[in-house]
Length: 349
Image (tube, rainbow, N blue to C red):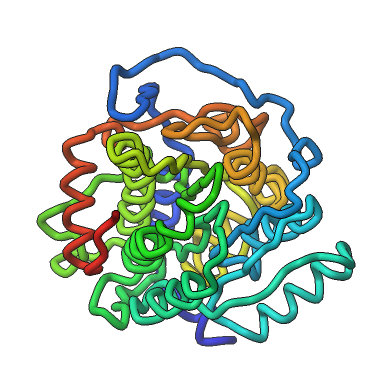
């Protein structure tokens, strides 16, 4: 048994069901940009598929975590529509394999790999410096990469709790550092991936790094809630400062990817529950539809949150996702933004 799989053995049934509750929980609030909440559903994108993407020739797009799962499906679909795609991830070998897989389906794909470790701010800065130095327009940034619920608390190279560092702080820094390249585009977009786990998340400002108490699932939910709040706050700041950036949030529902293997572990109770139901979950390609819509569709609006609209938003037709009250709190979002600036040393604009 691999060490990665052994890591999940300590999880209890209660822990596994807790995350299933997070993934399945929902709230009715629909908040936009921290304004007046709405209770109405709206499904402007129902029936939308990857084939509905417009031609993307000449567009330059960056996908974090594009070597597997939904990030790979994003890179594949965007390449098929003619975009120049940059896959940013940690493993160069997996990057080369991903490019080979894409070119097997899209022979003329304009796709390349760039090294990026989101849990290392020096790596984030290095990638941003390389891309900015090229002087090229960056039309779309898809903040996709994530880790989920490692059983033991890990610490990033910069000393941050690993899920917060990878899922949120790394993407916060990368987005800010690439803002100048994004603003060169005629239609710059930042798409940030959240999760239906945000419905049970809360930002613990008193123990943001889970130093006093580490619950892998609560830390995951917090990191993804932070991503959703970042997406909304970026839209507010873009409007206030005339940056012209369209910031859109998305979630995939529940999709079959490698998150479980790399997080709780294949031998964990969560993985066993997952295996029972995986046939009814989204494929990675289906899970990628919300981020592809947010990144390319003309009707995708800044400050909106897109995802499946079926049972508990786990799957189903694409539309507006429900926004938990915590994500719609503009004051907390501004506070979180300030904390992220201090921790990463990155200030926007």
